[in-house]
Amino acid sequence: LTLGYLALPALYYTNLWSGENWSVAIATWNTLLLLWLAVLVIMRGKQNSRRDWSWALPAALGLCAVNWLVPDLFSLAIVYLHPLVALWFLDRHLRRTRSEWLSTYRRCLILLPLLMVGMFWQLSGTPSLADDNGLAWRITQHAGGQLLPGVSTHLLVSMHVFLEMLHYAVWIIALPLIGASGAIWSTKTIPLARRRGGFPKLIAAILICSLFVIAVLWMGFTFNYAATRDIYFAVAMAHVLAEAPFLLRMI
Image (tube, rainbow, N blue to C red):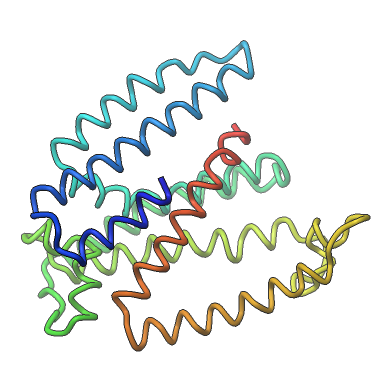
């Protein structure tokens, strides 16, 4: 799946396929993703005799049918819905580690649809963002500007940025703070570094290299947004695919 996702930008830039074939490539990758997730869910369900998760396969097949009908819109739905997975993961993590916070967290989640409705009410009638340069055009297209021409790109980009901010706030801020047993800037708070036989120096080196990679990414986005975006999303997709089995183990 990761190699297939990496191949998609290459196929796009080489112009080897027509627009119709491009939709077929996207639909094929989405189908493989759905079937893989269904297999993982069924395997996880078999680990507990009290669970019957055989519904995962027909559900995946139903989603595959929708995907083949509108592959571009299905992919856009993934763009907008995947940040919500982080909120679900945080919910499961709080249940395991900070159960006393769970009810408050779920009350806060009630505000999310209200905020989204408020954004729609305020921005749905605003003019679309200018996309007269390559960077602005890629941003609006990623948010669905071409697929939803009747919707203001001001609304689409704002909604996408809001959901992505929630997504990264969970992974970068909330989860480290919840799991920390001391100062969050200390490597001793990381299990792989503090446990006996751990790798504190290696973890510290990885963190330093990560700061360097962040700086390189920002420079890349500044000088060549399109190529850097493709590289970033390829790495991000590999990360998502790698973490899917671990997320299912929390159920």
